[in-house]
Length: 232
Image 1 (cartoon, rainbow, N blue to C red):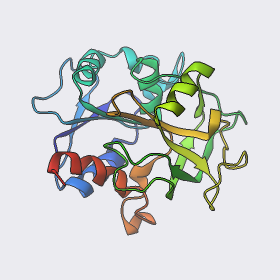
Image 2: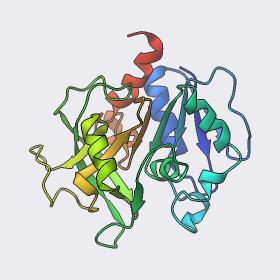
Image 3: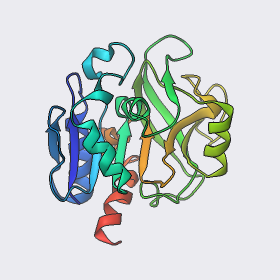
Image 4: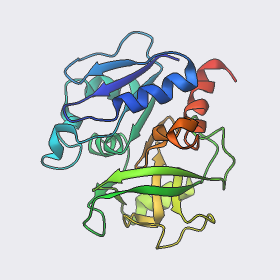
């Protein structure tokens, strides 16, 4: 699998993401600066990692969504390419119109940096096939604007089309208000595009892919997408 990680001014999770992708695929991804205007030939996956692109000026992800590389990403996605956005990457994808909804300030108005538990809401996607629906796993969160919001019509469509990928839950797998620390609508932690080939999520699965990191809870996501191109 040929993965490309986009690098914006203020991105700080590109190395974490590279480690996770290398762990799952055995191949080092390409890190591409945002001022490029095309993706490398043969790109299979585009990843928008976490951080604070352009210092989060205007709105989180708003400036990055208008970077020179983003038209190429939009074209790649329109042709059925696979795209993963984590944390700031999720914010960029919503600002670019590649995923619906928006990421607002956390309900507490405080930056959250802690582990959370996620429940897998669908295994029918290139990013979640190594899990069973209903499984829970641990993932670190680190964001100030992770409060997912969408209107009623969009929420109904996400629910009806099984496009909610992950929800915030407690350790027992229940989607409680207490588990929803950032206030996201319907406890939503991650969503899929209509063709299920774009995933945006707030927590960081790339930070739990090796026992030395404290666990491998996030590794199935990367093994899932790698399996698409390995044919397994």
